[in-house]
Image (tube, rainbow, N blue to C red; front, side, top):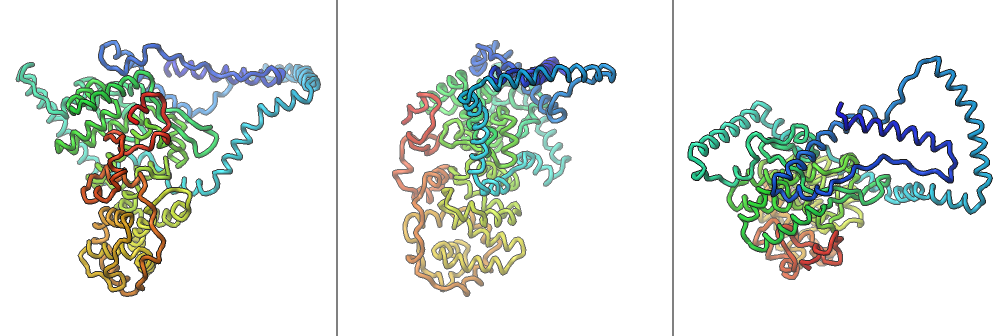
Length: 587
């Protein structure tokens, strides 16, 4: 056991002893005793700048702290509270008598003190002690049973967030080890060729340039304990550079809001990054990542550069590194609540939006790999953090549920108050509900799927008219010629078909023909109107970058200012929660 852990146990034992003594003292003079907080070094912020060797000590200290925190987590699971040391039997009997004798005068003193207090003092004391808990309970009850149901549906497993586990299940550990050994051998050969070429002939590709120095690796415990992704050995050895997490609301009240924050050093890096973006030279950002290997914004933008270079593997790797950075700074309470669907992040905070952006690009890379289970788990995570779905990730979720054979879960979600209530802003929920037809078909409930499909044709006839054309079948007479009523219907229809056409073509063509014969012809203009296109849908289409869909987004939304690749279509200035003044400069 390290000296740091021994000190922590001693502090806990001392705290327990002081609390027991405080209960016997006068209530009016009672003070809460808390363990001292570690003093932050005044030079910690300079580690984020990553320029000089002096920062290496701070980075090493941060990584050592991460290792010790991992040990502390395991220690807390084994021993939640420090047990008092065992005493011999004979002194214990004597101590009981002494405690009993001392208890009477202490009780008399306490009673005398209470009697000496007037009614105002007692009222003030009650107001100081009780309402905090009472309000917490009332606030928790005010969340309602709906949050509990939603939490169960959107709960996640950290094991399912790590793509290596799905790959291991698909291909086996031996195949994964073989591929890893080939990559390592290729990297060694590349280094040998560079050494033989001499210092003036070395030409590094971007992937090699962004790897860590040979022989310098992040400790294994830090790589494996990350809640979001499993770190990789070739990643540079450096700290998170000033990215942190704090709890915004009372952790006793669930759901609990958290937020990512930046210290002064990280804010300086952010301003430096923004100035590099203004230069419109992507290679400057690549060099910035080389110097600051865990700066989230720069990692995401460099991932985009790798995509343009047709290097999908590097693009996904950089997104993983960004999410790994977020995972390094998460609080223990956040991880526990997130696993149960009870953690929240406020989308209006610019620091939090970086997490959404990294997650969006990572989900797309997972879908390209065919690792649908992991991708679905990530969409659950973001829906859990903000059920209002500001990135419109439900456009991924309903399709991924079919690919991942999570049909039962999708049907439960569509039947829940999340879809059937008005609490959350889900403009395409009726469109996404149509995928339950394929889910029930996958579950073997053909009659239920057919009933839902007939109802869908009578509710969204323009959708199914376009869908039949998209999957190359004859449009049934009941919906033939029905067109979207307005621009909103048109975008929602085309977006749904863009995402779900392949699964309908694979599984649902015969059912579409059968349902078309049963469906009744309805007047589309007698049906409820669609919701106006919100910013979330515009943001999803902007990131998807499909020209046909982008042409359907309102021009005023798509060309609004500010709009950056590192913060696509952000909320209006008055809707943001800024941490400092310079964050509002783009507005």
